[in-house]
Amino acid sequence: MKNQLLGTQIVRANPYYENIYVSTGNNEGFFLSIEELTKILSEFDFNIEKKKTRKWLSVDLNEWRVEKFNEPRS
Image (spheres, rainbow, N blue to C red):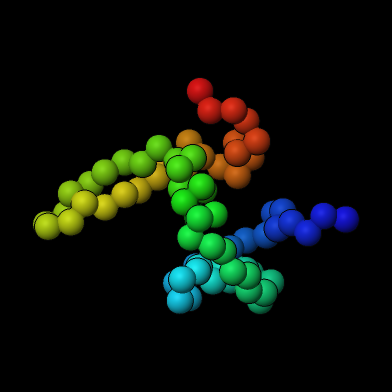
């Protein structure tokens, strides 16, 4: 049996020192390294929106669902 979070809802992600602490809907918590988070974020095509003095990134979630991560990018 593989140790995977398949179909588990992630409810929160917070910085925790040099890592990210990920909380699930099952009241479990896991650590994610900045390197792993960078790999994940590199798979998204972000929209950029300027608000006052900062630029914010957002993702069209209808374009990127969990099921699509197993497919090659076009």
